[in-house]
Image (cartoon, rainbow, N blue to C red; front, side, top):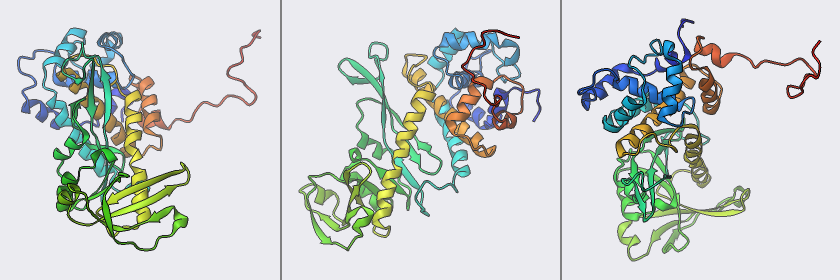
Length: 389
């Protein structure tokens, strides 16, 4: 790769520009646009994600200071706060909502052979939600409570690679179980859900679609035991019975048998109960699958502090969703780069390196492979010299 190109340009080269143009044409993104294109908007917002810019003014000042380098980075339009704000406000957010899944599809193909801690032939997914608090007076569209606004992200995470495959964005009032109505279950796949998604009517519909479910069991569940095989309690298992629901509504909504696995987590001194419609996997594997659900929590912990979705650059619904989808696209782009360049560093480390090297003219492989600078033995980097000789 040519040393004359800056790192930011090399990063953006991994984006499928042809697919991006198709998304723009689908929603007429360039209608009455003269100079600041959708591609310029995407690059400016992607730049804001990588070195952690906090506001539109911050983006403008930083990019204008790099004006001679912007053309070679792919940004052709003049960077100014007003055109960028107008683009976020008026250009359809679905352009970026359609573009991010294209990157997600590429990333999933790259990570398909990775292990996520449980050896399974089927695909494993984890579903959960997180809330981003907003000021209701500034974001009146994000209704949540009487005096508080919020938006919710509901990512469906592919456990291989920790890649979000489905990510609806709703206001804070939408209950988690309603997201199940938006999803089309994949036959043969295993979905790991928290207790908030325990709706037997919806779960039975998924079971009829040949999808497997693993979820937490409630303590007041009404059921009768059909069969209880012996278990090895040394592994943490307490019981693994096949049950039939007997509650007035639950028996009507889910008429077929389930497994109810009881497990004791010695590390956390916690007793856990799981429900599943998968009768072939060992009970210990079911418990390990639920442990893997924490990958979606790690996704939340990673994306909130490291991508700019806590402070929004615009107050409209269109601007907010545009920023979130571009943030997701950047997250997946970094995952693609990690795999294609065969980098051993974590996504966090890659982002930190990119944040300070974006406009350096070095091959990207060299940026991530250079060894750290070692100080001479006995040298303390925090010790100042009193005299210089």
